[in-house]
Length: 410
Image (tube, rainbow, N blue to C red):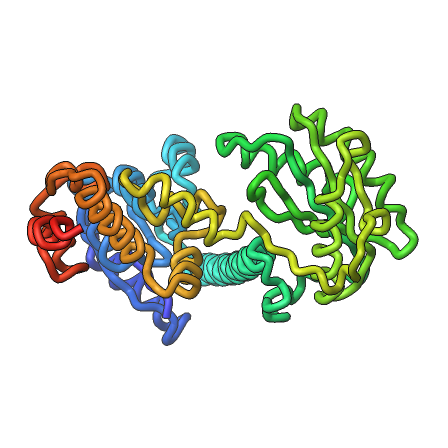
């Protein structure tokens, strides 16, 4: 059912219009009334009607004033002005409020029927368009989430364990991986650098790009079997060094197909990047002097997500660190980072940080002889009483007891 509001200070006008609408459109509308502008605004706040018939001349707040307030609340509702006065100024001002129609009283029955049919058709089309937009947005979010999961597995060096469906819709018929490594790292420029790389490559090739992690960025490039990847990489190198204003090196994997092929090419590109000379700065896996089959190379990505987080917390545990800040640091959404952290560490982020701080406090009290209050502040707590409660919850001892009984025996 659609909702319709009739705002008119004449009861007979309201009732007559309602009767005509219900007879012409049975079981289509739930109809509300308003006898003046203020009541019309209240009805819109409460019911959010799809269509409003608004009389211009009413006691108190008049039609255009009420429409101005209504538009602040609802930009979508269809508003039809009803008036016995054919004033151009009304029509001109009504346009600024996106009024759908300007109807002179008394309106003919067929005119109103045609108008309502047209408005219902517009509402239906707009609803369908919004559904399409929501569906497209959901698909984009799903794709971004899958991509985030996939890249996380990749950066952790565990792509062999990554479920195949994670890459659904991301694979190419044929393509290869390149690993781009920067000479220096700067967190403040990371997003800018990522965008520069994407623009340089996407102008020329269809590709999938990871975020930068530990100065490295991985790109899967769609390619034909006969493409000469080295020539493309050498050309890309010049563009990147000009755009990024620093030296770059690129490792290149072989052209593969499917998910398994993408994984293999990534391993090859990562390995090739380890052998890049300072002179050429581009290395294809075929030119790497390997002693073992690359299929059996076990890649240990030092810049894995969890390793990065643990190193970050070891250095910053004493500050007011939040999950959201750390998630941003490793280029993940807080929701996905929280799940990943719990899965890999076996603790929530908050519990891990709490235990880390308490362990540091214990060391400070025992090894450096700090007082409870000094240790409290050094590990990031601002309230010694709160610190004592947390300490006891973790260790089953108060900080004072621990300092006397444990540190005293060391």
